[in-house]
Image 1 (cartoon, rainbow, N blue to C red):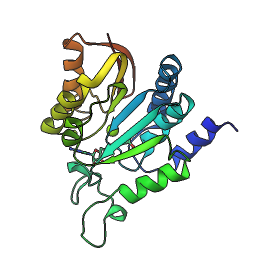
Image 2 (cartoon, rainbow, N blue to C red):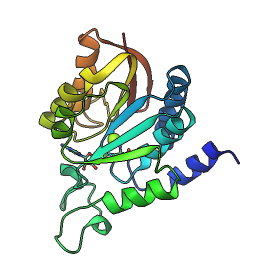
Image 3 (cartoon, rainbow, N blue to C red):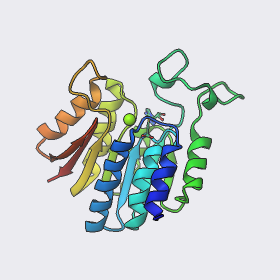
Image 4 (cartoon, rainbow, N blue to C red):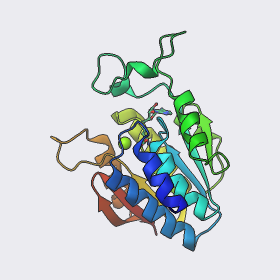
Length: 210
Ligand code: SAH
Ligand code: MG
């Protein structure tokens, strides 16, 4: 079995909200992009337990790129107690808060991706304000509330280099399928005329900076 096949099987075992088909699209676009622009700086907003980082990390590893995987690790609104995606096993017994960092660390270690996928722990916009490195690839999958999603869009998308990829998750055209903000920032990226559509897979939208 190839390294990529091993990582794909491993990704199936990681908790998260990334269907395999969309994970495969992350891997495919990341790998193709990495081949053209090797040794890039990539960043994902929203790490959770590391599932998307395994797919993107597989592509980053093969192109000697680095993937920063950013999260405050306390979950989004819908992950909190009483909401749809609450998982008791991720609650820190000491302070009662959700904490996905230990699980994320174990995922990256077990995947053998520790020198490719680098964690950034903190609030997204705060990190962005001090992050000067241009990005060859940006994957936006953080908070999906309007305020957070727009803040991420404004803070991170200007860092994407010409020909760089912008990938947005949980984009639902039909409001019945999911929340609006990821769809709205996707539309804003297109309307800015800075990005063009490359491909859609499920709720994943891949764009390229012109
Ligand atoms: N990309 C992951 C899933 C991310 S879930 C995967 O596919 O496996 C969304 C994550 O965004 C949550 O872990 C939550 O903690 C994080 N998040 C939400 N708002 C944030 C913010 N303002 N700063 C940092 N992380 C945030
Ligand atoms: Mg998502």
